[in-house]
Image (cartoon, rainbow, N blue to C red):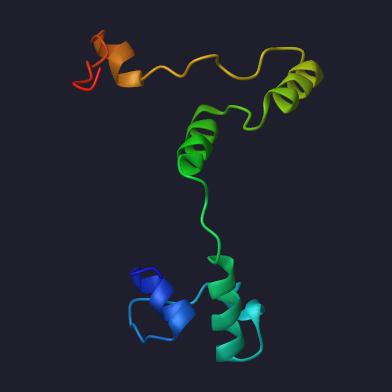
Length: 105
């Protein structure tokens, strides 16, 4: 269960003057109870750990997100290599700092 105010409002019916329903929220059901049930169902399953970071990196870097076969197919369609082999830390590139050493290694 989330502690986010918008979740508490949309999924649990908690009143909050600052939260305004998105126009698509109304399409989830004809009653408040049915909309809340459908909204909760949207968040029933969580993503695998790290997947959200992969999605952000792909989106922010304009990279293809998928398995190797999918990336190869997209590469063929566009005639170029689509994903970088290794994502570099932009701050390290700009400041030319060496990677931080882990105290666990």
